Image 1 (cartoon, rainbow, N blue to C red):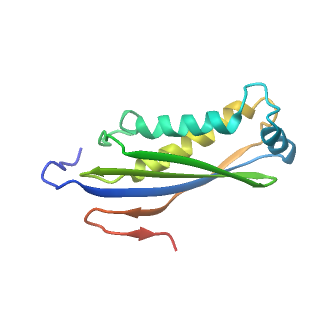
Image 2: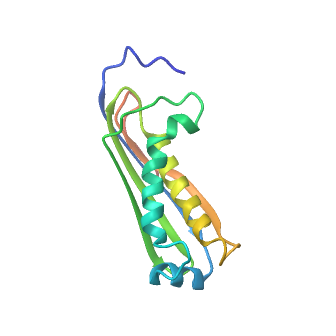
Amino acid sequence: MVDVGGKEPSARSARATGRIRMQPDTMRRIREGDTAKGDVLQIARLAGIMGAKQTAQLIPLCHPLGLDSVVVDFDTSVDEAIRIESQVAVNGRTGVEMEALTAVSVAALTIYDMCKSIDRQMVIEEVQLEEKQGGRSGHFRRA
């Protein structure tokens, strides 16, 4: 692990996105709450938040952080995909990019798990960091 002990804590945040493509009927069933395992998006939101909090246990050499906030949102306005976005913040010595990416990934995997019995063709794609702020490297925003 990189030694961050000499760094002063500062406000840091990161935003990540991803999407899961699916059949239009699968999206309809998610919107209508017509799936065997329950409310897909609420459970995926909770899973994404929990995933962000467990990042250090999942990613080798990742620092454990006491996160200040984790938000996971979904856009279901397109019939063939759910767009997932996470925003994570901490006042700490290292950034939260991995936590934001993990939140999106775990939320997408949860959607897949909850809907795999009705749609085995789902595809998780385009998981990426959109923006990060704070720390020595400053502000990054995907162009």
